[in-house]
Image (cartoon, rainbow, N blue to C red; front, side, top):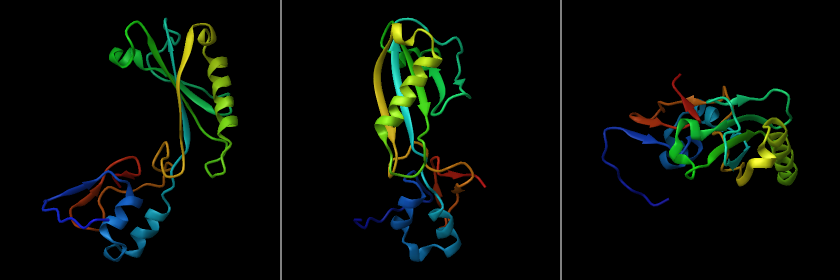
Length: 171
């Protein structure tokens, strides 16, 4: 890292705890805090986007799925923010977990299962939907910064250094 001096009353890091530690220097943090940071592990996931010419989801929130292997939710962003979709289109969003949070991952298999479940759980998708994008998140670029219950406090042991993002929480 290039050394830079920042004159500020407060610093907020959105780099995540694991990327903030080297910026601060391990020698400036206590062993208990470093142990908490070491427990932070990202959650891999798959996000699938479809567009359609007509609304396919009746709810204006997320449809939570309970009888699937990977896909756990489907939402239509267009109901919340019509500007996120091309004019006259609806933007559908599906979220899926991987088989295991730990590598190795069989991304093709994971995606195939999630796509199949998306189509099975949203009537009209095969007829009216068009696949827009599939995004996979894992390793150093996880879908969630950490598993629920494994966050570190927003306030760090360094005076006036705070964390932001999904790997930290007010404790």
